[in-house]
Image 1 (spheres, rainbow, N blue to C red):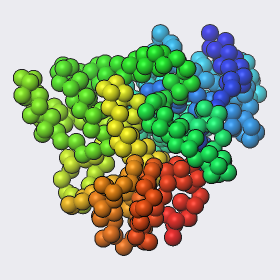
Image 2 (image 1 turned 90 degrees about the vertical axis):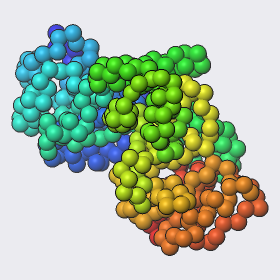
Image 3 (image 1 turned 45 degrees about the vertical axis):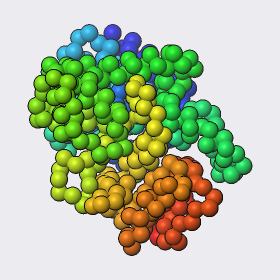
Image 4 (image 1 turned 90 degrees about the horizontal axis):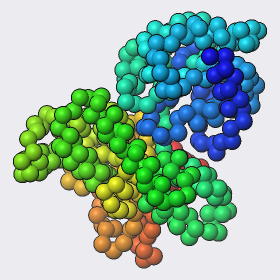
Length: 419
């Protein structure tokens, strides 16, 4: 059985045509040299399996492995969960006695007693990449089980540059200068529509909506209700609705508690705080803290994919715009905060002493509110925008940045970052 699966998957990876996503292959090569398991994790359907195929094809292209080294197994497709990996290993050597296997295990959490089995393979100095959905095992749990032997790499749904690539749109600097209106149009669609790779590639709008609902239902019932044994389904659904309404804002658990209470839905505040933790654990949301506050529960939230906001018809573009800026920052920096005493600064990056304000449309009504908190800052400060009224003037010490420069043409921005 394993011989057939090994050969079929080698052929599949070799022949599959992929739209390549952004990935630091140099980083991966360094980690594999250190005899560590590379673990790829992120929200369901974010494209981690096809990214794994891309990684393998890149390693083959650089002559680091051959297609006949690959042993790819998707454990979600097996009925039997207690698979003996030594049997897999022996099946490989019966096919390629003079080769060394490169193991890729998809949905590793489906394999019974997988940590011990992985360690056995790793001790033989085999290269191993694993992926999993977040339903049963989170990255912090994996790190606890495998300790220092695992290196976790996170995968997000498509960013704007990848979205353009999936749409076969030229985003060279020259094209941006000549056709900015075209990119404004595509950003509008990107904010309004879909980020999951499978949905972006689907043409039928009704099919897109149904796929999105399926993703959300799986996260609701399998990742949340089943995993955490949640009995208050009605309260959880209401909580999720509030999350999808209030992303890019500070969330108020006490307010949600009072709203549920007024509807005669009995639930404790502790349970709501647990919900808050669970939705972060499954990567539906990200939370960032106020660097100027010691109140631990005071958080701003962002969605891993704003497509989910379409489920409740939340089409507030400033929220979606700020959300994509956050996700872009998260890809680059381990620590992202917001700042607030009276006025709020959207993002603070302590590593670079960066202070960043985000505004979808800068106009007469909001300009004072947006620049006021930045005026008091003596470090590097930026205001990222989508559109701006012609008459508006910004103090010279505030770097005004168009979204295209930030999301696509990053070289100039990076130089400003580092000044």
